[in-house]
Length: 170
Image (cartoon, rainbow, N blue to C red; front, top):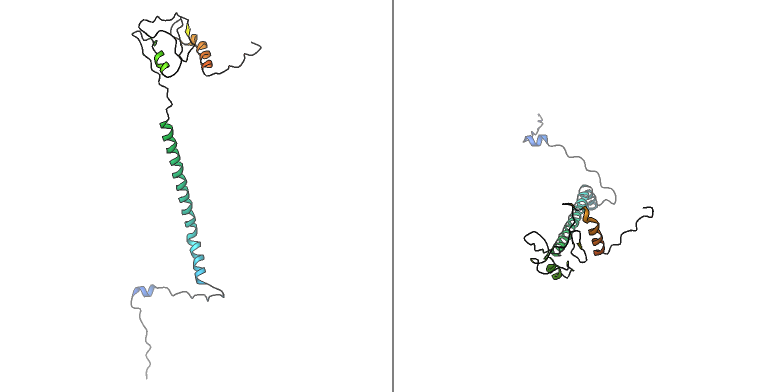
């Protein structure tokens, strides 16, 4: 009798390329597949979860800072910071009728006549610096150097600023 050896041919190319499975190690004593899977998960994805949590926290903090900034801008925009300065000018461009507007706001005015059409201009080099509205005309052309010392003294008095004493050597 002849014995025939039967050789099985692979049925597809995929079976030919399929690697042989690696032998599995024998489980050690006290081995828990669930704990091993958890360790594997933490090694692979634990870092990603931590980073995601940190980014969510940063997004929340950024949103809160943005809300606080928007709330602050809304609060500042509702406050009035500007005191209206209403001035009526005559045909020569003089601002002699600002007194009524200043008195309306509770401030001291120049102390001149109400009717700006009949009020006379104060003499040159005479300052009206007693109220919260100041006026002074100097001679010598268009420059403001001549009035500066008067207006600085007026502003110091208005804001209750005491200038430092002059040095003794000068």
